[in-house]
Image (cartoon, rainbow, N blue to C red; front, side):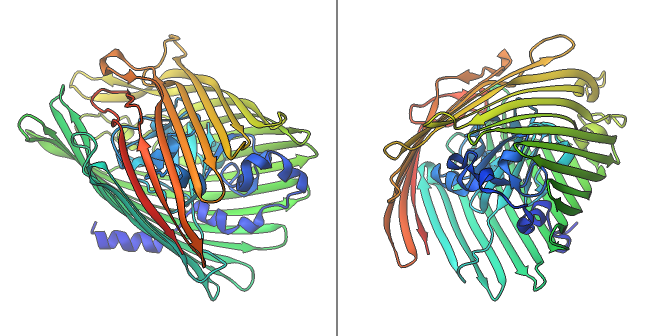
Length: 634
């Protein structure tokens, strides 16, 4: 399929679930002052979330374990990609190796990366062929907030039993006709991140536009990156109270994936990701809102593996995916109820070509069609909130599945919220496992979805005078888990042969500012085992620590010292290494402010003490390196 045709399909098909949801933000049910009192000191603008039930509601009425990250927090750590942000989140595990732009996939509470759904404007960023999302390729400038659900959310979103990472993009500036930002940074090995954004509203038409470029010659051998990104959002407020919104996003580039000298192997890849959304939000009555959404995405990746000693190419892999779909949702509010129900439809077509030296190229063209019906209610009675939900999914590849859930929250006065939930979830296997690749992986047409029964319980409180405390206990029992078997012909075949359990605890603490300084700390423990043999599962992050010391004098001087430690349950052959905490220092100083403009300089020192934390010794993390730049707002 030609690139022009792909572009037309993406533009015409348009939109996204979350775009439609956000367009209907006005549909959030009214909050009392008591709702907003709960933890408001620590949440600030985070008190309404859309991801748990697909419509805005107070975070105090959310039973799931959820974390919200704002644009301000992203800027404070001078993040380049989504991977940089997720690396700071308690309960999210990233094997963050290499420099900016390095290929990275997230895990949540010890899950497999192909159990985690990553969305931008409601458009899945996961490849169908392997179910994984490359968060190292997702830029951050257009991000307004990130909502992360830890654990299955199948009653709202369907497949992906590990969790949801929902990226919500910035909206047009409704107070000015034109406001923007220009930012540029430079670091070692010609590392540079250059961005520009513009937003405003003219005659009832709003717009947000972002463009940028990220480049590095590589902080490690064969670790270079060169990528471009662009994003646009346009919305129109209708006279009858409705709204239309269209978005278009692109990211693409080329990079090296380091060198494995033991295997005498070097890899490089090229990627392109184009997605578009079109949404319509309309208030049918004072209590009923309608949201309609269309979405489309085109993803392509080309990978080449070469022999280091000779330089000759050994393997070429090309993946081309086109997906499109739509959603319809009605939201009804009546006294204590806040009910959202609707339907989803998605179709994806894949073409994968694998070529190995001396073997004819193998081409497979699998597809996936799925549709679903869902309903989620939030019933608030006094201090008690009950959140029932259910969803029915049909897939063309792996059968049907029903996902019920039940959550409860209870407010103990103004300072403490108790949470508990039980949910049944599932995960559609990657298309590569079901259809095979015609070369290394044999097809498994009878493959079933993985299933999970998940329990979570926790609390968060500001009962203590100077700090906020949150703790969550979780247990995920997985059945029909996927396992690979080596066949006599040398191919691997995937089957549903395993039962697994992931259980553990998360603890987070944040203090109020004292002399403009605050502290945040988080710890996650995960025990992942085979339920049949009680053996521990390998390559799971067993212990993760995150620390942040923040200074902000509110007059233009900011500083953030972040620390990260992760200890994987790695196999000895990996030669993994886990030295003490890796520390990053981020500083920013305002140069001037006035007349609607301001400028600041910023500086980052990465890995201050040359720590080593990596799961595989052929994919190491960079040593200490520095970068700095300037931001200008107008």
